[in-house]
Length: 460
Image (cartoon, rainbow, N blue to C red; front, top):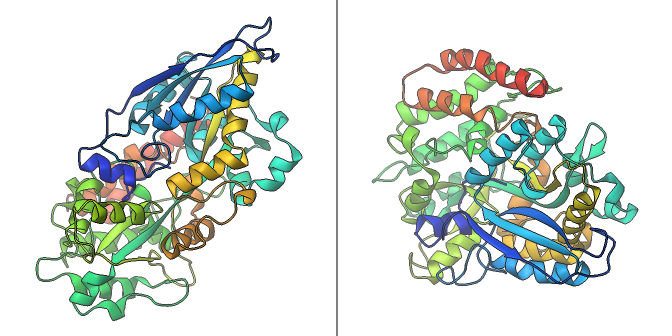
């Protein structure tokens, strides 16, 4: 889960309330009698976590909460069950952690024993052979309890490689109040799934681009969040990868058609904010909060972040009416959204005691009680059916969760999805800035993208 949409974390960061991105929290406990570690001594493991919410429950005051609050709360509970395991924990930002993991995979040193990551990258590391399978630590009840989406995403070449926790989801979110103010609310989809065609979306976008307002913007200055842009070529039927993941297939008429819509919105109809090629998603979020853009690249955390801004007095309580909808698509192609599990993986280690200790932490954090705590704090769908429906009284998140489970695009799970950002992001920037035509830019992306895929599949 690495998206830029308006999560509580992103909003706090944008307002300057987020603390430093890298903090360390270590804790030691007395030795116990568990066999892990041998000889009665404590087994020490390193744990890399990415801050997913504020405080312990996601509801703490961001001015006083620390990035390490959740880990500080979690570990004493873990130590009660495993008193002879010591966990040296670091709370990192994705942009800090991912280069470290890449270096560790290449060099064979410097890796954590257990870490949090999104499924696409975890699947990549499993393919590269640097992760320990979790199969022998999974019970039959675990496999029955983990929802099918998670079992699919944690499985690589017949083995399971991480302890699933939750899944991320996205939707295109409209400020229905702005649409009403501009006399265009009748153009938003109202069918049960809130699906619409590209033509219907373009009509709505045109109707709200007036009086100093714009329909939307693209955060092309950031790497995370590209799936909001991919949704347009995906919605035309394009795929970044071949079905077996071995070929880059994005240079296609379908991809060109979807991307051309975004290029025309910026360069011709002027429905995207000017200079969107250089914008950050956080900037676009602020414009949405200010009522200057009608659509937001939203996620499961969007509603809580908006409510938090209203409660803090940053925006008026009646200024935004959130209305999540599907990304547009060309029938009979269904909408294409981002849906990706997040979980805990154990780095390959010849020391079986270290592996067993790391597995114990993964198993503990993915238990029903801990999974429920994380799901509620993050407002994300849990990995376990036993957690139940945490969105029973929450129509906004019910919709976004349904979109994630129903319309998730398979490209996200292919080996190299995130690595291809170094090709696709500059491609999108060149297109929407008018420096290259759509077909020209897509054709130019083929060779470098295929080289990345080939290199990864060769184990480099």
